[in-house]
Length: 289
DNA sequence: GACTCGTGGTT
DNA sequence: TAACCAAGAGT
Image 1: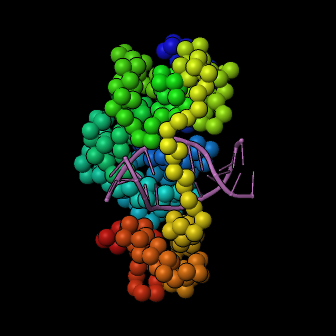
Image 2: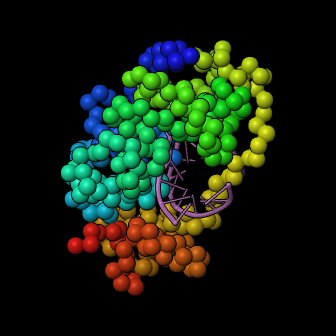
Image 3: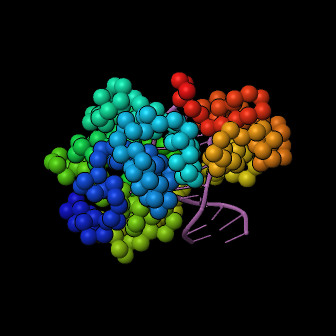
């Protein structure tokens, strides 16, 4: 199975810039943060722009946090931009400007959780770590557990399985990225293309006749009318403005004053917005300026 | 564990 | 077309 999957990967993998052999660990880290819950096609152009502007952690660390948020554009979840900026500063202060290699040191960076720490340690430094993202979890659920979807949250059994499957030699990283790529291109959530799957012959879910998902349906992501929508509109106005924004301009984005104020207060509490006074708001600047 | 947090393409 | 979904993290 390992050989079949890795061979498939070398033939079918997308040519993504952060997979290039000359991509720096910083480039890998930036890509992994951007790819958290955001599809590849939207990340790619923004990633190129970030690498051009801030080719090393120190370059971003010296920048205003608001500029990171602005350059984040419409990737979504702008807290990630703020945390990536904070991670760059932590890399400068704790690691002399060099992205750390160990899983534990990566995990300690802002915005870096288990997945991202394992991915960077593995893909940027060749370390041996089980990489469990939504793609890998779905592939393992189908191939080994015979279920259409994995559990709602990662289980100890999943982690054990992923580590058992992980090659003990230096092919561990390519095995992990191949599993991810298979989940992204073939073993997709909605309509898997089993005819193109290199491990279809061994897939428990397929061999069992594609049984339906029986567990609880995952909660939908409500959007219309939520605070997230209001936050999104407020951030869009601030991002697209070159300077501070008068309160009445922000007020225009949402009719319900109670919800609007709650959303704005939340953004300020999150550090995504900086109030200059009661009537003027802007993207955050560094404490010294 | 349950919830929150953006955005836009796909079905 | 409304619903689904996408390389998660933090609380």
